Length: 138
Picture 1 (cartoon, rainbow, N blue to C red):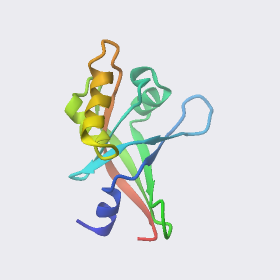
Picture 2 (spheres, one colour; picture 1 turned 180 degrees about the horizontal axis):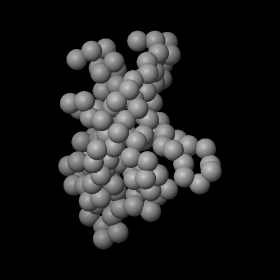
Picture 3 (cartoon, rainbow, N blue to C red; picture 1 turned 90 degrees about the vertical axis):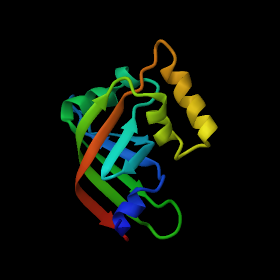
Picture 4 (tube, rainbow, N blue to C red; picture 1 turned 135 degrees about the vertical axis):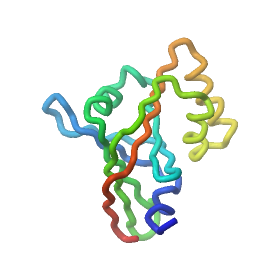
């Protein structure tokens, strides 16, 4: 694993960018993500299937994800990605695999279960393959 992959694999909060389709600037939103075996996974928030983000990603089929070191020298990595899979009914374990990077495992499981076990659960899990990288300070 190279320096870039190691850095990108840390649990930074990512900033996701996706092209707009209504004349507005690109949408940029913070997301929890995981980077494993060369693939990025992330899920929508509690507005899930109804979120503007979900619609834009489905249309564009590509996103950018930027992560940065939050302390010390500025270091950033941006992955320009093709969306390769959309799962509109992710499992609790899939969501925990991401959320558990950012919160204790029991909290991540409760967070995922509360949304996914509800009849109105709306999380959408996206998988994307990085195609181009931009790095600074690595």
